[in-house]
Amino acid sequence: MLKQAALIALLFAPLGASAQEASIEDVITNQLQAFNDRDVQEAWQYASPMIQGMFRTPENFGNMVRNGYPMVWDNSDVRFLEQEEFESRTRQEVLIKGPDGAFYILDYQMIETSQGWQINGVQVIPAPEVFS
Image (cartoon, rainbow, N blue to C red; front, side, top):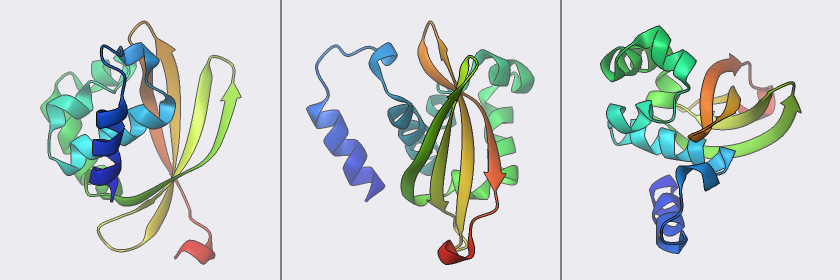
């Protein structure tokens, strides 16, 4: 379903749209799809300069996600929840189903850069029992 949504979004995206026009949801969706496609180079493009500086290479970044965030590496049933602005950042909560069939809530920290919205960090929040 996520692949279909991404395909539909691509088909209806205006020609010549820049990365700066991508919404927070678009950026997160595109990175999640890149991980499902095992395209670490593409996923790397959505990481902020701070994240890229910490991991130095797309391969290091991909290994960290694969080992530390299996629900991001192999994700499905993505739903966007609350979005909140604070200081120079925006946080976006995302409900996601991992490869183990469990649901997780991820707190994405987003920043706006000259390249548009980028992911500046992700924290796993315990999901309420209703999603388990």
